[in-house]
Each structure stands twice: as structure tokens, then as C-alpha cells.
Length: 223
Image (tube, rainbow, N blue to C red; front, top):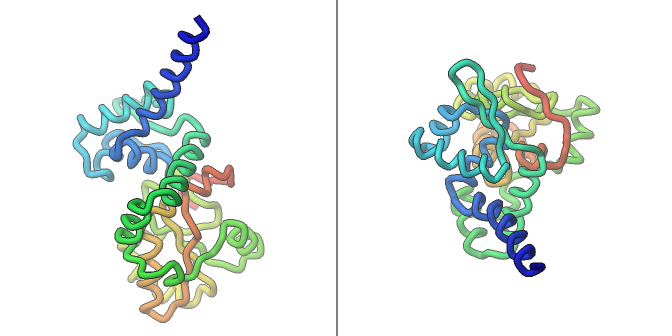
């Protein structure tokens, strides 16, 4: 009897593990860590068909990792809690530290010849800079992600619009850019673009995913 109960326990634990056992579902978790999204928005951003995205979201929902709400004809998905984001962050950290293949894939994706290519700002340092009003914090994610949840005090300048904001940022003093998380390339690209314009910008050491998982304040809507 005890053996049956133990096996049942591990069977239930495996449900959560299996829910994370798909690259497409991991991408959806990362997007949902930015904030609440509709199925249509998730499918479009992740480059999936609606049917595929819905099927993967149902797996996450059955594992109690996401929740839904309905507004008219639209269904909105969100992470069931910040602990889901924490689990995803922990899984990525272990994978990066223990798997050379993951590290190589990440470096190839970010196109980083070395970790010191761009200046980094820690979360603790960013908090101090924001409290003192000594930084212009730029969120380079798409507007819908910014509206769903962003670091208080940041302004949304999507990566594609960055060139049009160069002169404004040139006189802004210290500039820090951030995006979805440590596996997101947009903040790296933003720092390179601004550097090419003579603006000594830095990037947050990780991004919105890790900020939320750390339980730090998150604002929603337009600033």
C-alpha cells in the first residue's frame, strides 16, 4: 500500500515535469511570464498555429501551471503564480550551468563572443538607481507585453522604434535596457544599437521573467 502511494505521488509530480517537457510549452511559459495574454497573441508571438498553441496551453492548464479568464469571446491565459516563473527560472539556470549544449545554443542565439561585450546592471543596482532617479530604464519589448506587466519607472521603446528615439535618449543620462529575460536577445540588440549612436547604454543582467520571479514590484498598463 505504501509503495502504491509513493508511486502515485511520483506520478503526480511527473505531470508537472511532463508539462515542461516541450520546447513549445517552455516558450509559452516564458511569454506568460511577461503578463496575461490571449491565445491569439501567444500563437502569433510564438509563431504557432492557434490549434497548436491551444493544445499546449491545455497541457499547462491540466498541470495547474496556468489559469484562464474569459472576457467576452476572448480567453486570457496567465501563469498560476510567481512560483511557476520561479520553477522555470530554476530549470533554465540548471540547464545553462550543467549543459554545455544549452550554453553554446544560448551564445549562438545572443551572438555574444564574450560575456563582457555589453555592460550589465544587477537587479539590486537597478533598484537603487531607480530610487535615486539616476537612470532612464527602457523596456524594449512589444507594447502588449509592456502593458501586461513592466518594471515600475520604465518607458516602453520597442526595439523596432529605438532608432527614432535616439536623440531623446542621448540626453537622458544613464540608460539601461531590458526585455523578457536572460534568454532574450532584444536588450542585447538595443545596447548595440545605442552604442553605435554613441550612447553608453547597459542592459539589465536578466529581464522581466527573473524580475517577476524574484517577487519584485510589477506595474501594468501605460506609465
